[in-house]
Amino acid sequence: MPAEHYHSGSNPDLGFGDLKKMTESEKTSQKDNLTEISREILALKNKHHATILAHNYQIPEVQDIADFVGDSLELSRVASRLDTEVIIFCGVDFMAETAAILSPQKKVILPEKSAWCPMAHMITADQLRDLKRLYPEAAVVCYVNSTAEIKAESDICCTSANGLQVANSLSEKQIIFVPDRNLAAYIARHTDKTIIPWDGYCYVHDRFTAQEVLAARAEHPSAEVLVHPECRPDVIDLADFVCSTSGMSRHAKASAAREFIIGTEAGMVYRLKKENPEKQFYPLSKNAICKNMKKTDLTKVLRALQILQPRVTVPEDIALRAKKAIERMLDVKI
Ligand code: 13P
Ligand code: SF4
Image (cartoon, rainbow, N blue to C red):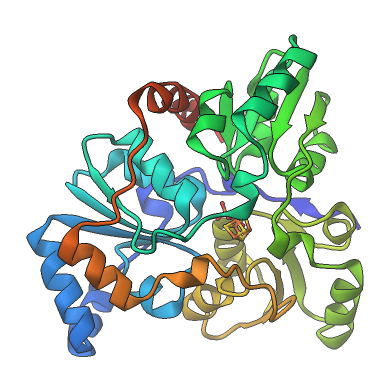
């Protein structure tokens, strides 16, 4: 049975309302259960008019203290709309860079300077320029998991939630797609466009195997299998649903199924369990850990709020060109 290909279009209200935003009762219970460090974080957050954004792969304590928890697309949208002076971005480098590009007047702080995404650094701007010379007719789509320089060389960005819609929104027949070969292959299988992929990959998702999916299904025969489009095609072929991390959250809530096998970074399971305490979630692999996503902890969040460092900035000439590619993506209807 072919997998159902879920994108954020499954929920038209994508934006503030679609994120895991702290509810009033969560805020009250948070106040009652605060640890000393959480109290200090909240006090400094108020003092600096700061907002804490956390990606779905962050450790539980960081997700719990955040104002918004979401996927890359949602956090980009929030960062662009926030009326706040300081953004504490608990994620990896390209996410904080994207926020800084969209809001250069805000202070965007990445609590752990060395939290980077290896895939984002698998292509250089020179390599992309060479590729553009080879395919002068092609449009360039870059996955948001890329450096600011790569975004500046691209016509439009996409995320795991909107890659297909972005590709289909373009008039060009040929598309250079960087840096993720697996997301490129996924889009290529569902569009009429010719996709010219770069050979980058996410080491966390690329390691999942078809055997692991078969073994997990044998162990949990009633479970639905949800996988991220950064997985290899043979893994995707065995899944029931292919979606971004927040697409997984929406699907798990809406589905009548009681059990789910989760084919993405294992940290995602924390959010899913918290939102659906009556359902069971099994990571496809407990070893699927993005080391860089785990570098941020409450001590680093506190330190970031104390010194408002390490600040992420992007040189203006690069930021202006990168912003066009990101904003063009944000205009694509999904
Ligand atoms: P999402 O956009 O689905 O959150 O994915 C980001 C990412 O880094 C996946 O590895
Ligand atoms: Fe990058 Fe993969 Fe980590 Fe996502 S999970 S930040 S793509 S290394």
